[in-house]
Image 1 (spheres, each protein chain N blue to C red):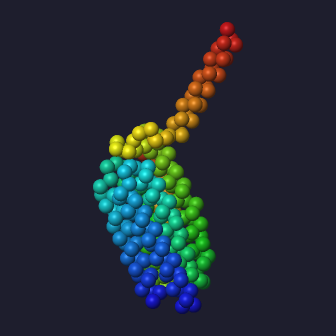
Image 2 (cartoon, chains in turn red, cyan; image 1 turned 120 degrees about the vertical axis):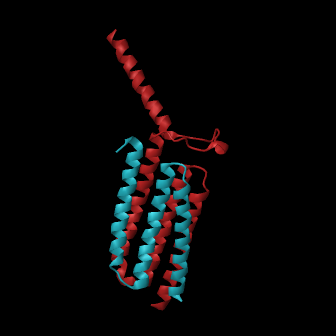
Image 3 (tube, rainbow over the protein chains, first blue to last red; image 1 turned 180 degrees about the vertical axis):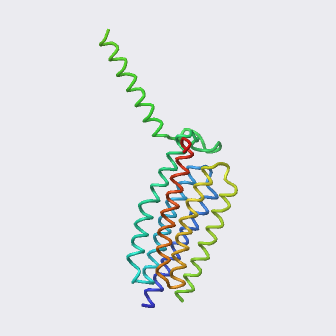
Length: 131
Length: 86
């Protein structure tokens, strides 16, 4: 039992290290999208490792810790996606000035423009048939 | 030994929360602040789980679960508010 607790404490230490990496990424990254990326992915892994470590230290708590882990695993990418979607729709530019360039890529805006073009084309075709 | 390493992990987590809080203070816009707040609530969730281990009471894990639910709803609500004014 003692060995299991020590293994669990080391797993929790790795999880806390990932949480620290997430915080450093939040403070260091250049724009909001990058901050969102580090702030949600790294905290998902970090908190899941932390819960696994506590579960190794207390094996009788595994049901509640499993519920917590699955909950984090499901909701954290969801909140990240909702945030990115909101940022995109209020027109936040993808990258700050020194990093912007031809490498910037916005698939959602591209798809929206393509759908708009397709709708326009079908409308024109309908008009041609009517004439 | 295990308790000492758990305490070190909790100290690292506290440091991470303080660093994320700087972004909440400094963030130029609402988006940066809510991103930092989201990360900070996940860290606080882990902190509550650590408290449950340290005090040896499993009931605190329920607190962590409810707190995670509420923080997720808060993030979604603020994102909707950013998008088109909830």
